[in-house]
Each structure stands twice: as C-alpha cells, then as structure tokens.
Length: 292
Image (tube, rainbow, N blue to C red):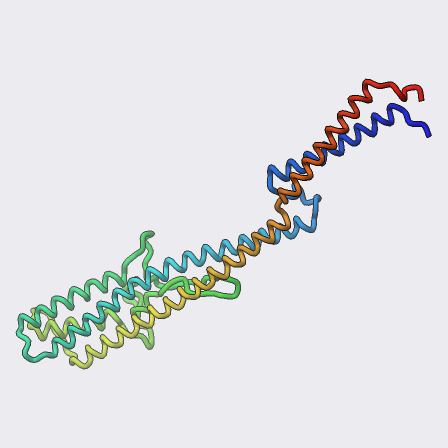
C-alpha cells in the first residue's frame, strides 16, 4: 500500500479541523454555561428545556399572585385587628355606662371616647393602601396561588362591614350586620344618656349592646377568614419554592454545561490540536514520501 505526503497532509489537516471544532464547542459551552447552542444539537433535551422553562414561568406567576394576595390580606387583617381592639373598648364603655351612679360629666366623657372610636373605625373601614386602592374593596377576584389552589384576592367591604362602604347607598347584605350603623347607634344612645345636644336614640341599651356584639363577631370572622387565606398563601409559597428548586435542578442537569467535563474535554482537544499542528509542521519540512 502506498502512502503519499499529500495523504499524510490531508489526515493531519482533518485531525486539526476535528480538534479545533471540538475545542470551539467546549469553549462555547464553558463561556455560555449552555450545553447546547441550538435545538438540533439535542432535540429531545432542548424540547424538554422549553417545557421546563414554561413551567418555571408558571411558578413565577404563582409567586407574584402570592405576593399580591399576601399584601392585600395582611393590610386588611391589620385594619380588622385594630378595629376589633377598639370594639373591645366600646364594649368596656358600654359596661361602664350602665353604672347608675355616673355623673353627667362622666357619661359625657364616655360618649366623647366612644365617638372618637366611631370616627376612627369609619376612617379605617374606607382607608386606602399606598397605591390608593381601598384596603376593603367593593369585590375580590379569585387568584390561583399554586396548581389547584385558588383564594380570594382580598377582604370585600360588604363581607367585613355588612355593606359596601365604597359605594353610597349600598344596601345591607342579607344575613350581615351593618357594623358602622351598629356603632353609630351605640354612640347616639350614649350621647342621649349623657345629655349631648343633637344626640337622639329610640333604641334600648340591650338593642345597642346586641348590635355591638354582632358587629364585633362579624369583624372577628372577617379577620379569621383573612388569616386562613394568609396561611394558605404561606403553604403555597413553600410548595412553589420547592417545585422551583426541583425545576431548576432538572433544567440544570438537562441543559447546563458540566464544567468539569467541558474543561477536561477542552484541554484534551487542545492537546490533540497541538500534536496535530506539530506533526503537520514537521511534514511540511520533510519530503520523505514525496517519491512514493
């Protein structure tokens, strides 16, 4: 079998080309951190990567929804907690007002305290958040916080206070207590008892006390429901974080560069390229086979 110099040259050039191509591929993997540069490199792995990317985007959506719901429910729960504390003060004032030995001045002081609480709760019930949106909106939306789990976006005004305080002329929801009206009725009763001009009440103490109790229970129910939603969001956040970690690990295993393997491969191809270049250089200066 005859071997010519040209054949040796061609073999050396082919070896250098192969080593160069492999070295470039490893270098690209190392620099980009991506195991594949195009879909044709590994259609199966890349297609799964696209699917995993879609799943990661869905998890991001769930996280955004969780943050929005958490902020809304936290604001509502904080306001409700403050109102409940003040309702306890009103209950205490109601008990004190039943003391028959109180002077008109003492009754007036209780009225002034109750009226201040009344004004504060009215303000809290219609307060807005930092973005100017009602803390207790007219309605809520259903928000998905993890696969298969949907919660209310916030606490609706009518659910907490019996009617929508954001809309004038809103009617009382069936089965609900008008919280603001119940507090107002108690304040009017106390004002009349204290002889405050303009304060007139046609209801009994038992009626206004019952109204306060129903208002208190309704606010407490609203806060409990808000707390339950907050608990669901916390659980969903933990679940989504776990899924996100798993997806990131799977995606990395499937698509990311194995740096140790890529570095070793690059080093190997560089050594082969150098060897081929040295052989080619020696062949260029030799004509040993030129006559064969």
